[in-house]
Amino acid sequence: MPRDCIFLVPGDWDSRTGGYLYDRRIVDGLRAAGWRVTRCSPGDRFPLPDAATHEQAQRVIDALPDGALVVADGLGFSALPDLVEQHAQRLRWVALVHHPLAFESGLSSAEQSRLFDSERRALACARQVVVTSPATAQALAAFDVPAERITVVEPGTDRAPQATGGGAGAGALSLLCVATVTARKGHTVLLEALAGLQDRAWQLHCAGSLARDDATVAAVRAGVARHGLAERVTWHGEVDSRALEALYAQADLFVLPSFHEGYGMALAEALARGLPIVSCTAGAIPDTVPATAGVLVPPGDAQALRGALQRLMDDAAERAALAAGAHAAAQRLPNWDDAGARFAAVLDAVAP
Image 1 (cartoon, rainbow, N blue to C red):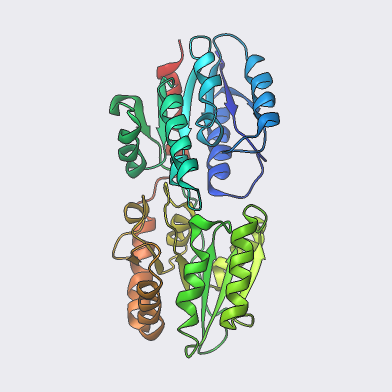
Image 2: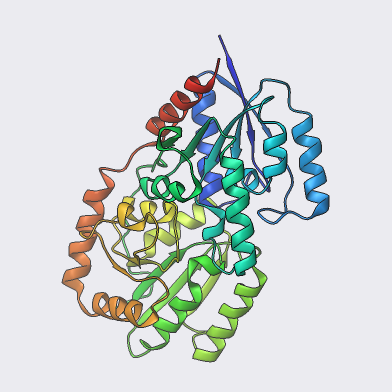
């Protein structure tokens, strides 16, 4: 007998970010397992909805049928505590938290406080909370979510061809950063680190949307100009899967200096391609990237990041050892079939 659920996800369902990719792959897995999944959006301006977006969300949620099993992506769910509370008895809420909204970089203290409170209130109404890493599960203790109402469903990772490298030409290294250009992803820190390594031969390729955080995009462009890196850094913007695969293939080293990650799907994709990694000890990153596959530094520390990059630029043997460690770590990553089955088990437990 078919089972029904609704995915309530704000914004553009086809966005090429880790969170949206996770949602799409989970829905694909549920449908393959016999679930009938309906998608709807509460609007676009999240996690800080304006009045018009709030009114749209009210209309969308009011129209959901009584008793519906609703998987609500935390980007919208946690920003709508009044509506979540209003419908808590009528709807069966399952919250999907990629990372707490208050952990986003670039927020004012007032915005952080407001998002923390709204997320705590909304999560209190969820019958179950799905998170993408043990680190995020632990973080939700601060939001008063009991451990028994939290289930970890890590993202899957597809098998991928090993990177061949050499994209920067003989004697140079091709660095790859795959991340939407927002404050949390640390591009400004990366540019500062690389500014002190201009005596080495390298090229940096950045793949990720340039349309989600105008202030950060302006800051990174100013940083490129200030440090004289225009000939060294290429901003590809949001790319399709074929172009992204080509960027992974030509890379010698993967770098992601995030201030926080709820999992870090791009890091898992880099592991799957056998790329050595330089990243940060932030959020779930240490759980995703073992010491055998990468070098992790404190988030926001440009000097430490520069030191890690210099070390790997100068030591081909260590890069090779980390590449072998990345390949080994990739064999232990979960696949999407497993992720879909675990998610379905959560919904089965909530369904009547």
